[in-house]
Image 1 (cartoon, rainbow, N blue to C red):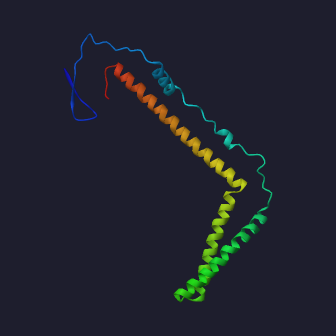
Image 2 (image 1 turned 135 degrees about the horizontal axis):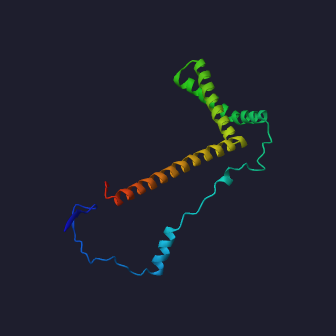
Image 3 (image 1 turned 90 degrees about the horizontal axis):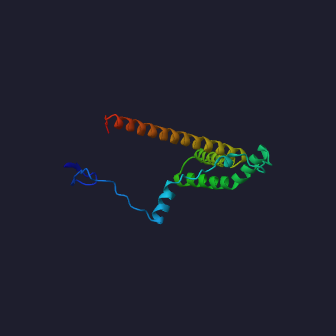
Length: 170
């Protein structure tokens, strides 16, 4: 008799090998057969290349100058809020007028930078850059996945060869 520890708990299971032990064959129900076929079927292939094709009809109808003017117009209400806020901060904390100018300039510059970044990100060229970045990311993940599958297949083959030769190390 051979004693092997159970990997799920600390109990010992007693295993007895008999020469007349034969594999048990039982007939599967149609439901079990369908479930096995479902899980054994290859996963459907998802085609992502079409998403990375240039889209027709997405034309830029404005020039860079027009977009910059529109950005300044959208920035005006926020600039007025920053002006009132910086004057209020100077008045509340008894700071000098130079500090109000610095606070106002910093807040306005940060707002302009973030709005300009969003403007460029949402433009046609920004969307095309996003497509390229996404395609690179997906290609890198696919290559890593393929490499991992090849590594696992190689390890399984090597393990099989070692078992056949009687040198099982695992």
